[in-house]
Length: 167
Image 1 (spheres, one colour):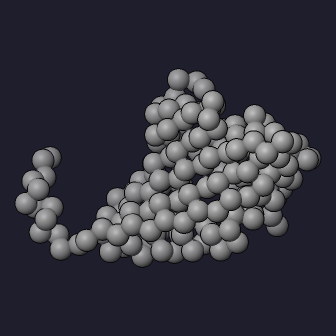
Image 2 (image 1 turned 135 degrees about the vertical axis):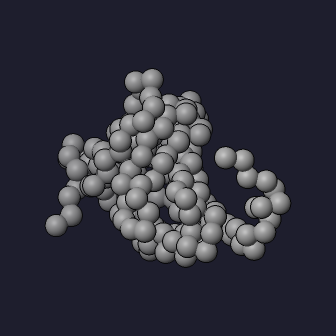
């Protein structure tokens, strides 16, 4: 199906973009921490994280890896693509999409001796009015505690070798 530019311009919807970043310190060396932000290793510390691989060359994380995760209504699942993966510079960026919205998740880890500073940026773009509403809710929920939940979960995992589970 081909959609003309004329048809798109008649939708009367103007996409919006919202973004937020937070940084936190993890009690581990960058070479131990950075891999935990890949889709496979995240399962070790993120309670409920269960990606379904669609395309991979077998690596734990790699550029152009594609997977999806289930989500709550009104959307059925999120499709994820690793659009940037730079192990040497400890950078990974995901592009995530649904029919309502597209967003980018950028994770940059920086060594700080025996600790690592992780900076996580979410940038949401709406594709329709529903996406705009969902984006605002998602951004507020994600940064309600400025990612302290991520910090606690990763630090617990690094200290105990197991996931911090929530009751």
